[in-house]
Length: 225
Image (cartoon, rainbow, N blue to C red):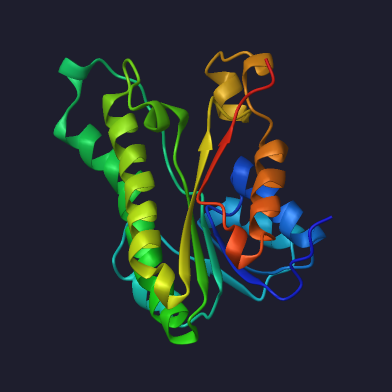
């Protein structure tokens, strides 16, 4: 079992399927958690997991940055995001805004919130969740989704290159397939072709315990098929 007893980790998207699996791993490893989410899903996460802070925030809103800056953490795990399929020629301006706001703008605001304290303490880790389509730079009927998740990966890896000399590192998680969630099952996806969120969470916990000189920047997790 990983030991994260000295870590304070901010987990966004608290209450979602992936975030819940990660929170369980973090709790088992003894980490202190700051849970960030919205409404009922956040409340369920707060009831299930101990947290030093519980923040009900819309990370699409730039006002969330100041709220996050009041909290000191050494790790950010950002799981907020959305997914949709559409024919490229039918995509609208609203589709574009919704996809990039959920997948990239939320990450940008979260980073802007936690980064000043990380730079002051000369220690920090920022993890973003990308997607298999982004890793392959292709995805039929998912151009906006693929582009927004590729932006997540590029942003986090660029932060790593820019800030690693100042003690702040970046890491990207690529689920190389759909995550086994109630929503994906309702969408008709087969459970045996999806990734168990618990497997993703264990990969995250493993990566968090690597020594500084063995830092992992990218993790690709495939369905067991």
